[in-house]
Image 1 (cartoon, rainbow, N blue to C red):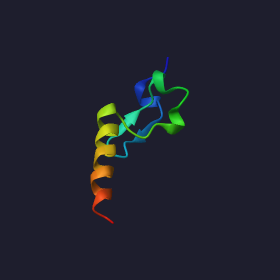
Image 2 (cartoon, rainbow, N blue to C red):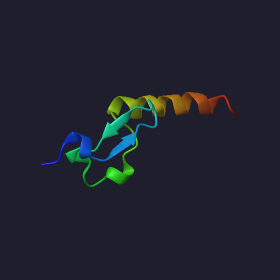
Image 3 (spheres, rainbow, N blue to C red):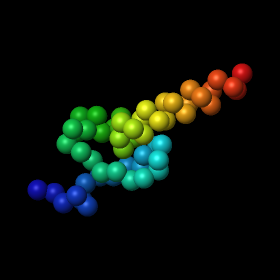
Image 4 (cartoon, helix red, strand yellow):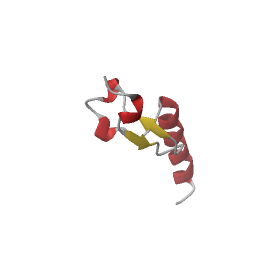
Length: 55
């Protein structure tokens, strides 16, 4: 068994905090960008609000 400190890590694109590999991300690890559902939904919400006034 691997220690948590030995697992690969990434930095969340929304909050900037590091997060470790999880078993449920085993097949999609290259596509994972956010540490949680909350960060993913917050990022989508901030993208929409910032893009509307830029026209």
